[in-house]
Image (cartoon, rainbow, N blue to C red; front, side, top):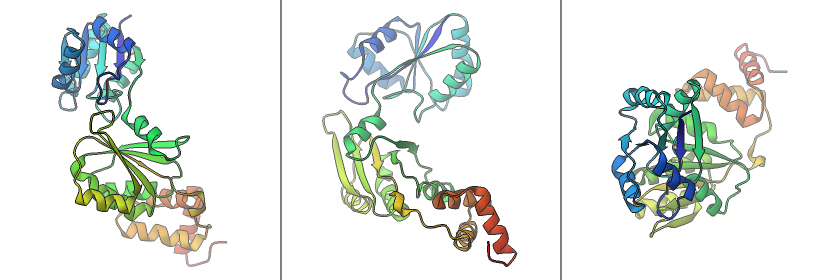
Length: 281
């Protein structure tokens, strides 16, 4: 049976590729790459001449059935992203989902990952973490996503573009408070740097020193003691405030429930009794 190989590629230093990955890239019938120009540089470095095709967010509607058809015909395909593990914050996820649904073989070939590389070098707790990828760029969706993370106790990992870094750090500082952050830039490359400090300090520093290159943020989670004692009246008022600010009621109750460590049903009960004008019992 043909296989779809998910091949991790270097996130910077070309030596960070496994012997198995090189073997697979040489032996498959086709390599599907997020950016063929970027992947050609890697293949040329290792003198690999396997045929290459593009697979990115702008052509996945047409290319997904095309690649699935090749797999059904018995062709082995390697899927690679610009860097790191395919399927993480890139369109490879779509192809993997469709291949699994079709009963085709999906074979991971592990290797470099910017998120995990930054995490282990951050100096922040690495035992439990939540990968968030790229935040929504602006507006209500961004505010809701940040608010939902306020009570998250696990270490948080984000990707961000350099031109949006200072604004994102400011938004994180406003929502999450005085948390520690590690800003990892150009990991494994010549100018690799890991800046450590508070979110507010980071926002100021990168406002004055605009960065270049790929950015991974590692942010400390909320301390357990930051969770407020549950007060039904305050919880109901918090829901009302979020709804008044434009958040959907269901999402507002979910967020407040998370902040207080209560079930959504308990928050709904508090809101209902507050609306009926009596103190929750």
